[in-house]
Structures are given as structure tokens and as C-alpha cells.
Length: 441
View 1 (cartoon, rainbow, N blue to C red):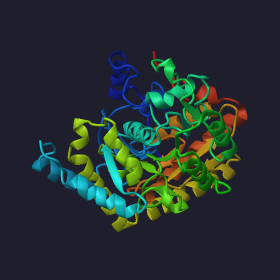
View 2 (cartoon, rainbow, N blue to C red):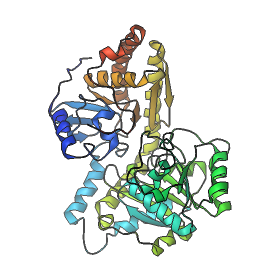
View 3 (spheres, rainbow, N blue to C red):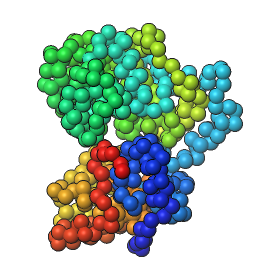
View 4 (cartoon, rainbow, N blue to C red):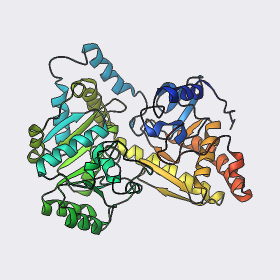
């Protein structure tokens, strides 16, 4: 396999300029160049189609990383979704009147989730979670929240770090500081760990919780009726149970992953995969709880545009017709088998985690962040955008995986030698990738 020289091109230069104009460089932590390969990551794209991404210098890469941070589950610029969106654009995406697709999408979502009766829409996962929390608080009449996992950037969530700046470290992103979050929100959001029902019980006993927010599944399977017990506690306490399905939904099944566990929340939030890269989010719930939305003010102009619902309808339709979740599982399993086989070949210690649709691995070494950076660097030289996880899409094929694993084979050989000779740091052409939130210079 031919390797490329990683030279500083237009993308790296534009990223350096962007950091002087935009605080943090861009709008999403997970897309910062420093999270992948500081000083070397191409940073910007000119074109994206399927799993091929072309940068500002005209170099094309195969994406085996986050695929639009999990948004493009059909692949970039899917032709069927784009066709529906282009038609909507030509007919008009905004009007004084409402888009009928809002109602059509609501009916589709209720059929997929028979426990739910009503829906409100937003355009991003973070804001949808804040809407869900507002509705849940309004319904329960109590303000305190017990939460598990990562749920976005809003005040209600970051207030969890007012009591301790490490409260959120075990919930996906370390280093999140609550600067700008009112101190009056202290102890209004209290974290508990997944599969630790005893922690939730302690929080409920001490604080009198009105809302419980959690991902039903991310990388860890629920144990010992964990989800059922969470629901039991919510019902006992009169608390509203909110399932954050921003990342999980539409990957293992068509709809929310909670359907696979036969546990119905009071509210579920769907985003990311629902519309294949076009902004869209849905907050679905029971009529009893969702009716509380009419007693509080939740309203925004661009939640009424037409493209989001149209893209969601086209995406869900293709998921159903093509049985996309089955494809994602097959491809993800092929990737995991390849990683494990190559790790054995080169006597490297790695751990893998699922689900197959969001398959990932980690290096089991003290200098794991250096190793991750070296892996990304060497894979980029071989024409792949990578990290240590792959958000699998319908556009990934078995042949793509074989090509990817041939590159991994070469890179694991380099890493084996570097580990044995303790030269990992010397092989890095730039700084080590960031592992969490950090202020950028």
C-alpha cells in the first residue's frame, strides 16, 4: 500500500486561521483537528460522498472514523435522501404556513414507538435534550435531575460539575468546566453511573428527584434488569424518565434502541441518524407528559423548516426498505474480527467495545493516547480518516473493510516495533491528540 507524505496544506492553514476568528476553532469539539491529529489533520472538506471525503487540496480519503460524528448512517450525500431534500428545496423550505411533513413524520414515529403519543421537533440533539428536560420538569413539578452519561452543552447538564469539576469525567467527556453556568443550579443535576442502581437509589433518597435522564445503551449492556429498575424507581418517585437516544437510535434497529429491551420511557429523544446529516431531532413521549409542553414556552422559527422532516422521512424509509441495522452489524463485526486478529498477529494488547454499529477499540498501554495519535497519523498516510472507533454506515462495504484492514495491518506492525523499542513519541510528527475538552491556543 502506497503511503502519502502528510504535508501542511490548505486545511491545516485554514484551521490555524479559524482559531483566531472562532473561539475553539469550530462549532463542535468532536471535529477539532486536535482531537484527531494536531498540526496534520486535513480539517476541512470540499466534497463528501459515500465514505469518500475530499479535502481542500483535492486529496481523497476513505472515512473509517466518525462519519459526520454519527449523523450520516447511510453514508455521505445519500442519493435517495438528497433527492427528497432537493425536491423540498425547490418547493420551498420555509413559509408562513406549516410543513405537512411534520404530521407525516409524527405518525411514522408513533408507529415505530407504540408507547408514545406525541412529538415535538428541534434541529439538534443538544437542544432537543434541553427541551425534553424542560417538559419533564414541567410535568413532574420537580426541578432536580438524576442523570447518567453525556447529554450536551446546556446549563442543566454542565451544572452537574458545579459540585465537583470531576463529576462529569465518567460521563464521556473529561475536563468540562461549568464556567458561565449559574451557581444557583448547584445540586440540581446529580450524576450516577450506568448499571449502578444503588447510586440512583441514594440520589433519590437524598434529593427528591423529578427527572431521570440516561442513555438506555451506548457501549455497555444493561445488567440485572437495570433499565427496568430505573423505570420502577421513576414510577415510584413520580419522576419523568427520559431516554437520550441521540447517538443510539436507528443503528441497532429502526427506531429507539430501548425497543430492543422492552422498556418504555416517558420521553425519548431521537437525533443524529434520523435524517442522515440534515439537521433534525424529535422529542417523543406519552400524552400525559408531553401535554406539559403547552404550559411552558418552547418555540423557535427554524424548528418549523421543511428540510429536516423531509430528510427524516426519506432516511427512515430507506432504513426500513434496506434493513440498514443488519448491514451495520455485519460490517461492524467484520471490523472487530479484523482488529482482534491483527492485534494477535502483532502481540498488541487492545480491548474492543460495541455495539457493532459504533464499534471501537483502545490500546491497553499507559501511553495509549500517544499510540492512538500514531495510529491516526499512519492511517492518514495510507489514505484513511480514522480514530479508534468506526461509526459504521450503509455505504461501508466488505471490500472497503478489507482495504481498511490491510492498512491497519501495516500500521499495527509499526506500532508493535515502536512499543518494543519505546520509540512511539519519536515517531509522532506533531503533538499528541487531545483526549477531552481543552482550551485551544
